[in-house]
Length: 398
Image 1 (cartoon, rainbow, N blue to C red):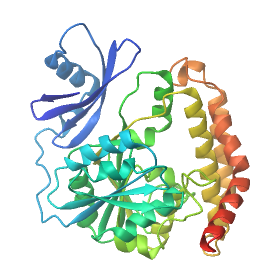
Image 2: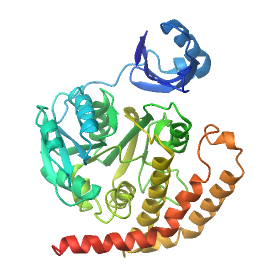
Image 3: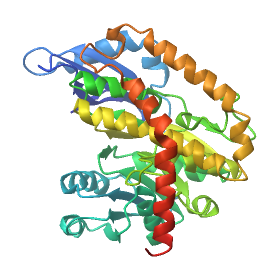
């Protein structure tokens, strides 16, 4: 749902309980996210004036800090490409394309990469959208799919998103505004907000993914200028996520695209976006984050899905580190940071063990999820080597 207020909008009011007795909303003023508010939902119509009052009370000075500021100046908008990779999810891709087709951007194309599909259902859906082009990538793996989209695109700028994401109407405009403003920027990331959190499972995932969804300050990081500490550039979680990122085409070509050993659809299960962030930085580009570029992500809804996701995160993170240990140009960068990284991991484990159950974003969230993620990290060498063998077999045509 969306509610318009004077100079502001309340975006995506989402249920907070099984009876939808409460809601959380993101307040946006002139395109700038100001923060989240939570409020009770009574019977009947939502009182927009009451939402405005509660937003003012909960956000305090930040509620008015950007009100009345002029929107960024308009500019000549270059042709852009949006790439969505999908596999056997026709309902999701249909909804995703409907939102992409409605983007407020003057000149863009949509490339849908169908990754090793079981049937032609995705092709049939894509054919029904005028802006969209269909690309088939027969080799399973998100990196293979993203690289196929890169090869098929017709512009010098590319924005990637996922098929389970709903984009804000201004998303591409804000991504491109940031990307073209500074030629040193090779990658732009944005906010990934939670689309729906009716259960404890979604609330747990929302809390774990808070780096994506709650950073309201624009910032830029590069080898020359950053404030991310001794682990930099191996702080990829601070840069963003693959559900909402964009690149100059040249930046991706300079790093030879995404590493096909990493990513969903391979034994590693992920890590390809983290790897791309670090390699773009090491090539001398900056990574910029803008909270104005907003997408809405639908999180895992069952305990089994959430455990699989956490295990996959662990495998993906471990595999990303192993990939950089295996490369001559990055090996010593990782080795010099292992001690610091291990210390922080131990601190995270101790902090999680010491939390009361309610701190896991409500009492019904399954326990032991951090251990599931750690198990994935411990087992990542097996999955990484398996994925490397598969990648070699693909290159050999076996």
